[in-house]
Image (cartoon, rainbow, N blue to C red; front, top):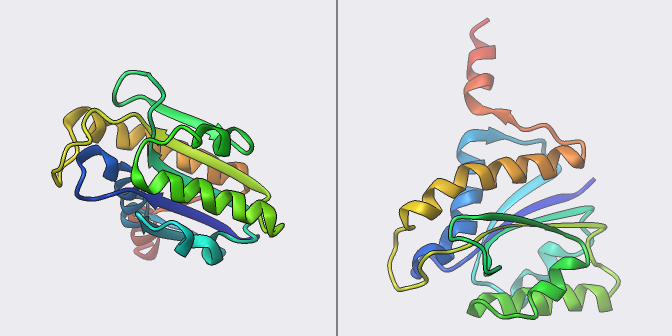
Length: 167
């Protein structure tokens, strides 16, 4: 089983960076099996084609515009995602849609696809998340962990690993 957790977003556009911040929190706090890769995809588009190809499960964390209240967390699956990204929110999303379509054409589309999105409050230039989006990192991370569990992956909190070594 090959799983990729991919955070995408622009660190210079405020809440646009939330996907990257979610995967940073995952890496900082959890240990994952070797068949699960965690990647900060930044604003890359087609450059991610090879790393996304042929995955059993691709989990993407990103900022998304759904019309819901800023800080809301949305989870989309499989065919819902390319259709959702046809409504462009930010510069990298066109690239993500293009990569997903290219993967379909090359028959390397992930077997399962999950998008964990957070509705941004501000996409203005800046390097900090707004408070409402910062608060959404925890529930969004919980959704990423739930998606991993759906693929049979149990993440271990790093403090649990350290505590087990002391027994």
